[in-house]
Length: 338
Image (cartoon, rainbow, N blue to C red; front, side):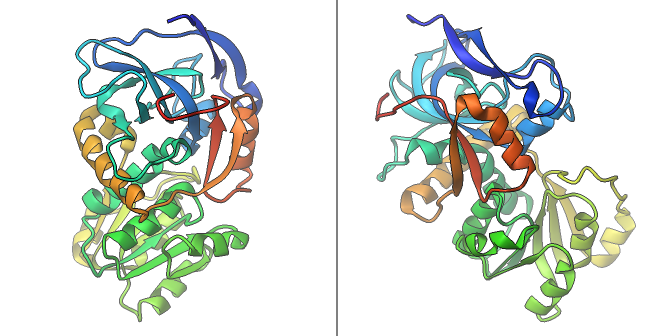
């Protein structure tokens, strides 16, 4: 390759958005099973913020960025089924805030195998939100047609994807909560029957389900929402936990309480799945990208900022001033085949 250096946003120390620095960094060479991607867009996620804050304690310095879309520029040894110049989406689990990123082939997803074109902006925010939403509903909750579902943070990226995916999988009733009532109208357009404030949601759920309770709850808010969610589950209901945004102390859940009430608590971590069973994510990616190609799933992008404004993107997420996903534009112009 002609380029030897790239622009990248680096976290040199833990702290607020101001610690993010743009640096010249070496472009890596793909090793066995890896793909070098020239990044067009990178998604911005809460996980990026938590890593920057030191909640996940990654080794310093590091380049954040869990998901990207772009064009393949080089293939590592043993990589098959891809070609240089191909547009792809990838779950990078770090390194995405850069002009180039190395991704595992098993976590890289071609965009040119569907009847309808999937644009790079949608593809850049697809890996974390769509694979999280689909995985929770299909595999953790094992959702059945005709069931009811409550999704917290309905105006966030995962929330807007989960509402649509739940509808596509045959949910009978899709409810959501929001922390900011100004976001209700936007969230309602993504598959929800009803949206209500997270404060006091228990009574709203009971009324919406005619006292039966809800079959499935998706929660990344943490306490106290988590315990409150458990209380509104119907018999044989499932609470799926996939984050802890509040950071509040956990409340222990007694197994005896669960078996006596016929309820379940299930965890879901896309990061862990990427390490333990990447082939499962590959299968889910094909299924969710197909939903996107068919028009059954459209991911909400609230704003696109240049890579140099990554710190501003983090500030806006922390301020909860957006609906859907924030995106960083890395490459000035993109075209099919790059």
